[in-house]
Each structure stands twice: as C-alpha cells, then as structure tokens.
Image 1 (cartoon, helix red, strand yellow):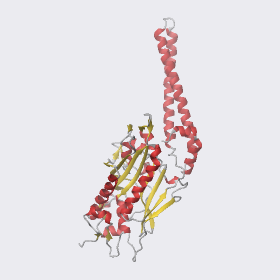
Image 2 (image 1 turned 60 degrees about the horizontal axis):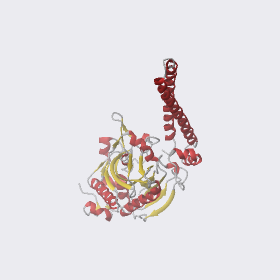
Image 3 (image 1 turned 90 degrees about the vertical axis):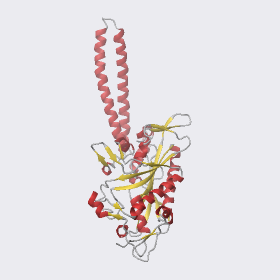
Image 4 (image 1 turned 135 degrees about the vertical axis):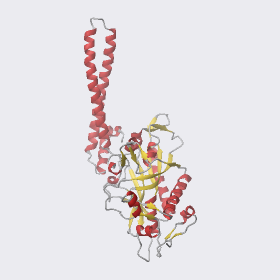
Length: 423
C-alpha cells in the first residue's frame, strides 16, 4: 500500500499515477476521504474512551448522593463508546478497501498507456538467420524428447507436461547455472515454499486484480504461489531487518502455479504458457534510496544470464497500464523466437518501492536508529519452461538438432548438441 502521507500532502501526484495506469483517478480522492473519515472516527472513539475512564474514576470517588447520576452517565458513555468503536472499525475497513484500489506510485519516466505502449530501451545479440524454415519449440521438444504434453494433459489436464530425458536434465542444468550466477554475486540461495498464507499473498499484491490467476486451497486457506517473490517477501514480514551493510538479496527457487485466466486460445502449443513451472527468482530488501540502483543491478544480472545462453533479446520499459499493482516500474527482457518472428517475454524485474513492505510491516533502522519502511524488488533470473522453449527455438539446426550454448554445457556433462535418439 502507498504511504497515506503522500495522499494527504500531494493528492495530485496520486491521481496522476492512477490515471497513467488507466485507473479512475477518483480512487485517489476516495482514499483521501476514507483516510479523513477513519481519523475522525478514531478521534471520536478515543475521546469518548477517555471520558469513560474519567467517569469511572469519578464513580469510585463519588459520595452516595452523587453516585446514581454518575452511574447513569457512565452507562450512557458505555453505549456511546461501543457505537464509536463500531464506527471506527467500519471506517478502518473502508480505509483498507479504498487503500487496495490505489496502486503503487509510478516512478517518473514510466511510459503511460497499456500493453502496447512500452518503450524499447535496447537490443542485445544478433537475430539468427536460418537457411531453412525454423520449427517451433513445440515440434522440436516432441521430436527431441524434451517434454511430453499429451501425457501431461492425460495426468493433470491442459497446459501441464512432463519434462523427459534431456528436458529434465535441462531444467536441473538451468536452475544450477542460475543459482551459481546468483551466488557469485552474493545472493543467498533459497528453496522457497509454494504454499503461502493469505497475508503473504495479499501483502505482495496478488489478491487484487490478479486474484483470478491464483490457485486457492479453501480447506487450508493456503495459496499456491505464482512466483517465489511471494514467499521471499513474507520471509521478513513483521521484522526489522539489518540493512546497515547494504541490501539483503535472495535467489529463491520454487514451483510456480498460474491459472492463466483470460489466456484461453493463447500460446496453447508447447510449454511457453503453462499452469505449472519452476523458476529462480531474485528478491531484494533495501532502503528506498537504494531501490532504483538495485533495479538496474537486477536487470544487468538478467541480461548477463540471457547473454550466457546466447539468446537475442530486447529490454523494454513497461507502460504504467501494464504494471502490476505493486510495481512502480518494470523492465522486461524479451527473447526473439525465430519460428514466431517476434519477441516474447522471458524475464521481468520490478521495483516495488515501499508498497509491499508497508503491507507486510518490514522495516529497517535508519542512521538515527529509527524504524523506517524498507523497499523491495524482484526479478526473474530463469523461468525454466520458457527458457527451454527459447533455447530450442533459437539454437535449432537444419537437421532438427539443437546446439547447446557453451555456458550451460558444464551443467550437462559437456553435451554440445541435443539430437533425436533412435527408437
């Protein structure tokens, strides 16, 4: 959630941010009104409570003649306090609801508009030129025994799969390669749970507009995460963390689950858009002053990883209307898929400023020892199935085999080429 002080002191900034996201700017005014109503209701309740305590003391000291009138007044105050407490609780609930409708304040420079209004920042690597018609990753994955979609659907339903043979080895290789790079830069490797409580899911902003994407286990009131960002953000909830030596950085591996609601008919072939996949996610806690520099650092690590895999890609600055509620700015790295003749998102990194940490009550101490709200950032280092899809598409050869980039060969026992095995 955003800082209410900004709403009180600079309402136009909040309105402009909401409008850039394509959200009715009146939601900012509604939050301001709800904040004022809650403060008024709380002040009334606290005033009556103070008067009630004074009345209670007066009864204790009263003479026999004074006591009946004072007891009558105390009874009236008890009813008034109960009503005021109910009003204050309702005002607090109204404030929470209004607060949830106002997304994180976008950072200056974020493009306005929707999904197609991004700004391309750079292109990296050469787009491959084939002397043959490239096959898509779905056909290659089937032919080379990388994955088995029909049996995945038989066992679990549409958009599930088995990684088989070299596909399973590729997953382990990619995860180990990603973790090795992350550890080399001082990120702490983590294996994160895929089931979390509602507080972590709500605190990271995934139960608002994204609620229809989430799997919920009603009997246990637990949620399957769509990214280990959720668990890593909850890891330090209700804590004061030590940032005196600089940012705290994690690299979390987990299985991820997404319902892909609203995507029916899109990317139904292969393993690009599936309901379950494994991922290595970077997550950072830092001071708000360090957040933008950390955002650039996460992007550079993503670019390094894609470069090692010899994948041609571009970096885009995502438009405000395409940001999640928690992100103040997001960069995507999109890899060129020769079979589709277009760029597709492979990784993203978001600066969430203090939005998530304020919800999750994550703080640090400033130089004067005072608790302050921390900033959080996240960035995908390797979404496994999409990365496998990109490797097959980009590094395919005319004979139907796929060249293995040098950087990942040590994690595959020196394998240089993925080729079909005779039955």
